[in-house]
Length: 164
Image (cartoon, rainbow, N blue to C red):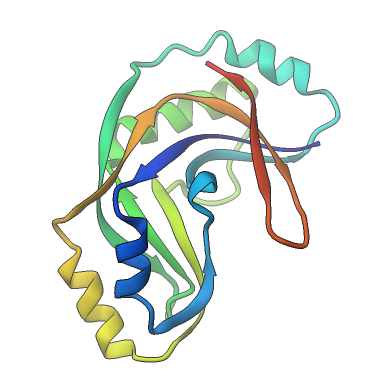
C-alpha cells in the first residue's frame, strides 16, 4: 500500500488561481486531493504499526492560513500555496522522530497546486506570483492523517485510513 502522512487543505477560489495562471501548461491538483505531505512513506506492508505509533503523537490542532504562492525550480516546475512554517516544521520533525524515519529532502511546508510542464509567459508568471504575495489563498487545518495513495491513469486517488 502506497502511503504518506499529511493533511488535506482548502483553497478558497481555486478556479480563479487556475484562471490567473492559465498561460502555464501543467497538471493541476484535483481540488479534493489538495494536501500537505509531512512524510512520504512509499510502499508499506504493515500499516498497523504506523497507525499505532501515530496514536501517540501530541500536537496542537489549529487552522493556519495559506498565504501567497511560490514555486520550485528554475524554470518553475511546481506552483504551490505557502504554509506558515513554524507549527508545521515541529510537527514534521515529531512525526519523523516518532516513526524513526528521516525525510530524504528538506521539509518546506507547502501545498502543491500544479506540476508545471511549460510557462508560456515567464514574465507574466513572476508578476502573478508577486500579485499573490500577501493574499490568503486558503487554509490548512493542522492535523495528521495516514493517507493511502492509489495511482490511476487519471491521476492519484487519496483516501485517509487514519486521523490523529
